[in-house]
Image (tube, rainbow, N blue to C red; front, side, top):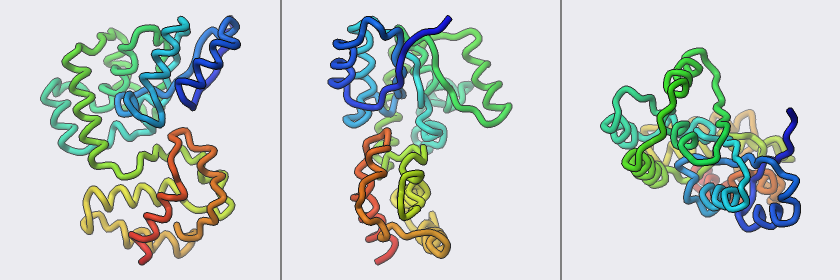
Amino acid sequence: MKKLGFSFHDTAEFLEKILLEIGEDIEFVQLQINYLDWESDSVQSRKCYEVCQKYHKPVIVMEPIKGGKLVNIPQAGIDLLKAQDEKMSVASWAIRFASSLDDVFMVLSGMSTWEQLEDNLSYMEDFKPLTKEEIETTFKVAKIINDTTAIACTACNYCKENCPMQIQIPEIFELYNNEKRFGMASGSKKKYQDMIKTHAKASDCIECRSCEGHCPQHLTIVDYLKTVAKTFED
């Protein structure tokens, strides 16, 4: 059976405009939903989800683990999750958060190993929604992550594919985030210097902003590249 729907990467206000105009023909909406983006001003996970509920549109969830960002979280976040339930994997919290929402009928989880597949099946075969207390724990973890993440890049690579200078934007942002989290111990500056021996520098950006038009996170990539250049090139 075929169903008509669309994947959405914009504001809740624009989503409501779409559903008001053509909503009768739409049978589902695919949204980026995870506990880190739930209250994000740019992604607007909660607001978009609430618009879908208002117009009775079932939701497919993409990016429940935010491109892997909700697996490799700060130790303080891991400690909080393990204190709540030491048997559950870090990834499971993100997928269960999205799966616990009303009117979500599918959660798309990217997996790259057999172990990840088995982990997903272990808690989804007999799924139990998160409790109110557990949901509050995920929001505490989100705050820890936000406090230690300078640039909320998910490494989707859409920006890099459209960069005329072929700047390795996601890789550069990851190095910058590690520099802010761990300082000199991260070795990020040296890794950056090694990278630009064969690739363009952050300062090579010509400010065409093509990258920003393709960023699902709506990052001000050009401004961030200037910040990275000051950090690693000055």
